[in-house]
Image (cartoon, rainbow over all chains, first blue to last red; front, side):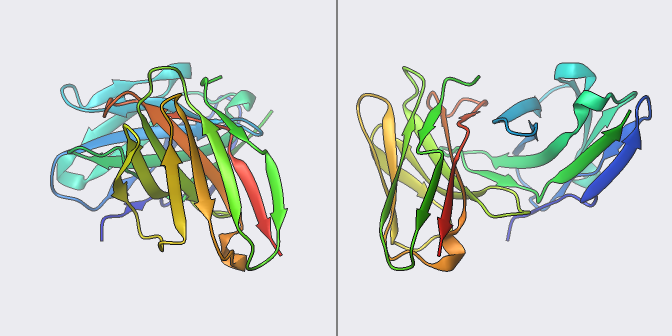
Amino acid sequence: AQSVSQHNHHVILSEAASLELGCNYSYGGTVNLFWYVQYPGQHLQLLLKYFSGDPLVKGIKGFEAEFIKSKFSFNLRKPSVQWSDTAEYFCAVKHGGATNKLIFGTGTLLAVQP
Amino acid sequence: ETGVTQSPTHLIKTRGQQVTLRCSSQSGHNTVSWYQQALGQGPQFIFQYYREEENGRGNFPPRFSGLQFPNYSSELNVNALELDDSALYLCASTVDYQETQYFGPGTRLLVL
């Protein structure tokens, strides 16, 4: 079955530390890739997305992600985190076709200590 | 804000009851998807409605059903509630199959 794996369930960082959250998916066909963020008490928000082209994509709030097709990975990075980045982060995959079905990973809870 | 609203915000039901959750999408968003997010898990796709017809379904039993209306609102109905149905239910809308889906704040359902 198609799946998305997020290897880090909980991450604790100090402010200004660098962040990398892993995401791997299991599907060999064309995929669209997303990172969503859920701040405490807020909606799921789109952080960034990859559909085609440059495998290094930039999103909001200084986040970026790199699509490595050979590794089925789409890792999220930020060079210097802030306390306000404390949130839950979800990686998601959408397959091609007439559907908006997103397959989500289990999420990574990031706590940034001031 | 995403322009997608859901009601109610919280709901408590007992096992065996039926529940209806509502979602109001942005004007023009003709595609709505519903997701179930259990505690500690990522959202799981329940089904999708496109122009008022179901056209995609995840691994959920038939007691999960839905409706989409011409005014860009939609409903998720769950019959014969089970304890495991306790979760956050999210709707997400977009235009056709565009890349970005906009999520609502969710309805938290507790089944006792």
